[in-house]
Length: 260
View 1: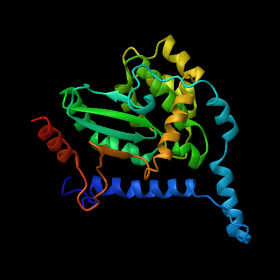
View 2: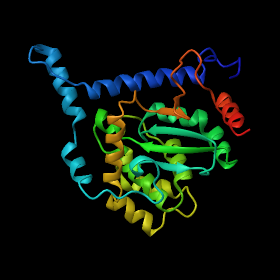
View 3: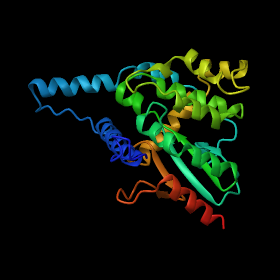
View 4: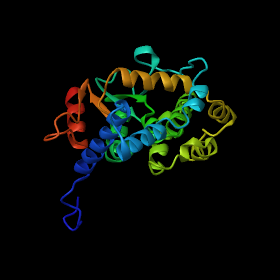
């Protein structure tokens, strides 16, 4: 970062770490919303209000995810819940749990995108993407679910990697459920050559992979992961050591070393 940048003392890595901490706090609140009968007055009202907001649209979401589980083309990993990018023979594996509405996920993608894409193109790294819907649960709405379904539809068309990047590059504000609009998701597909055809549009509008996305989100919850993004390099959390976290440069060096 340039020394002339007034924000230079706060690196992109530090801002990402701070955003992840905020995201983890939101995730913890979602998982542990228990309103005690002893809580009264304003605090009780605030807690109940927060619970209602988190559960907004639950009935609609249950309907959206009540159909058969249809995995996208080439789904990999345990129970077929991962979308793999890169060559099978790559010696290093990056496991990424993300939510397309998650601000910290966007920060991770913006910081690491070029490095990850370069390493996968070289055949040195494969990435297994797992999709979650935490922001829908925290904020209400269905943008996380619908964006994840659209991403799975792009996998059917062999266009997951570029569409995944487009979604994060065009992520709305966390409180703006813009990705709940299928027309918006189809419009963004126009930024990926050869994606916005009839089959993709039908897949998005039908919510073909909604139940698969819901199953992936349940797997995330069952794994009791700390939040999104959760990123593992060959099974090791790259953010576990906050004093010495993996950077894009260190990721590149580690992968290149593993590949000899």
